[in-house]
Amino acid sequence: MAHHQVLSALASRIPLAPSKFGTVLRSLDSLAAFIERHEASLEETLDRVSGCREWGLKLSADPAIAREAAAAASSPSLAPIQEELAQATDGKAFFIRKKLKLAIEAEAQRNLTARAIEVHQKLDALARRSVHIRNYPSLSGAGAKGRVLLLNAAYLVETSGETAFHGALDAMRRSFAAAGLSDALTGPWPSYNFVSLPSGETANV
Image (cartoon, rainbow, N blue to C red; front, side):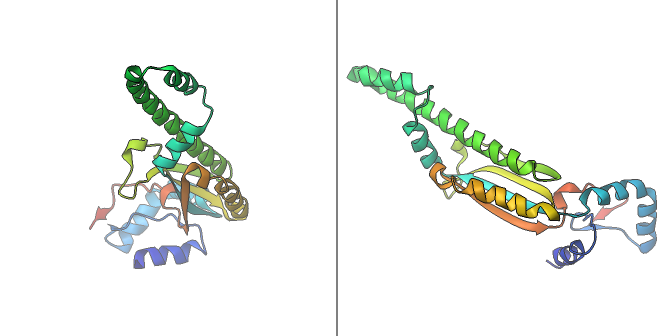
């Protein structure tokens, strides 16, 4: 917690390239030597994150609502199966229902993946950089609360562009509930996911 508080305080005042927690240099001399050896790389990193803050977004979905929405929609991929089921005999209907269930699952997966991609692309366009931490898993991977984490991403956003960034997310949120989606936005953070400091001179404790 103290490590994070120090980084947060510094990040609000100066460009900051945070190292991983627990990474140490043994002395001030070793720190000075590290900076001298990697001066160009460190300057490039600080230029990349200067004027920006990191925001994290997790987008999750309720698979049951996604399946219901897919079944209710007039999808070209489902219509022939639904028509076949309506005309089937009792014996054949059992197998067609299983076929339809699989088709609905696939349609729901496509719909949610498309929404996650849409959300990410719109936010990425308003960020200096972005990174996927995890994205687009299967609906069958629902967690203990019955939800699937569709997108876990971080965005490096210029402070001057944060209003537009948050406005774009708010606009998309208006349609989330009907699709079974919800999001959790966190930040601002120091640029943890957009810094890769040189290694080799550090020791982890």
